[in-house]
Amino acid sequence: MVYGSRCSHLPTAPQCSQWLREHWSIENRVFGVLDVTYGEDRNPARGISVALSQLRCISLNIMRRLGYRYVPDGHRAAAALPERGLAWLRSV
Image (tube, rainbow, N blue to C red; front, side):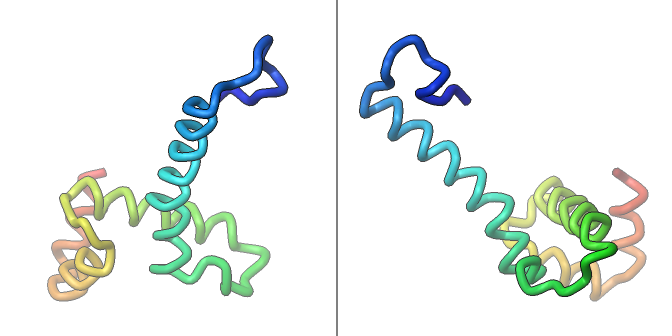
């Protein structure tokens, strides 16, 4: 991503709009899901928060890779058959 302060010219309105859409697209697809599904913003664990965040990201990526549009659906599928969840982890 290129910001206006680094450009030799000022960005146009459509360029600014595109940059904002790209930013919020990432925010909504990744960080919004992690916060809603895992409550990351409410997590009081300070010392292990980085490790937990990494595990949550891995879980999110596994669910998406397997075609689950909604992460809770993937969690329910893994919880219904724990062997399935373990097989998913081994496949990564």
